[in-house]
Image 1: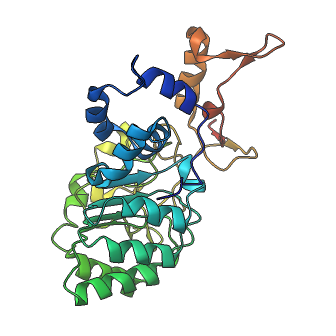
Image 2: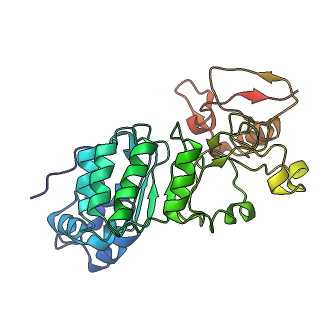
Image 3: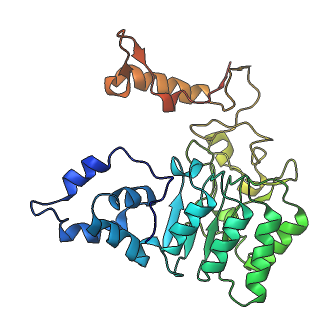
Length: 309
């Protein structure tokens, strides 16, 4: 019998169990139909409620056809846990998305790829222990065996991608005919969407930055003063190493004074004013400390640098 996944800890399990069970102690039949709409974290929590739900969650391979893991699970999941999860798909998994899963290694991903020949989308942005060279090797092996179905690859945040590797990745994925889609779909930078979604049509997420010529994630600018320009020729279209951007709206920040804090991200004065105005006019957006002082929610203060005159 499969052991419980050790990276899943949820203090809401008892509460969920009380809500899901009917008077007879068994879940309502309608609940089993709802399982297909749950994400990985909710599926794992639901599977801890009772035996019936546990068997349903573990035994239905369709529930694991698409696996997306991000915070808070991304910092906990290991190679062993990932292999257990993906094995539940019983070889029919089509999409695997691992966002900033810092414990996943090349060996773990290799075993997952070998066990899931129907995978068409592989997203590993920010998985710093993975190497592009190893991903490329795995794709070569799958292609030589005639089992490669991956057409969409996300490797933003992985370092050291060379031009040679990039060209080979595009060739293996058949990306040349898809790369043109990127010019018609602008990509904006803002909190919670640093990486390209697996739902996007383009084959690979990185490209050559127009400014530094490095292979990185490149962002367009949503500012009205920049939108009128041809996207391909935008002077502020570049990676975040070349162009500083507001963490809230994604607009370029340039030619202005700034104040540095202990944080590494930026917020433009327009967004800052809107944020402060929202906090002043919407009491429920604020919290109150034990001393009665107003407290700005943590997600609104995390990693901000203020730019402006």
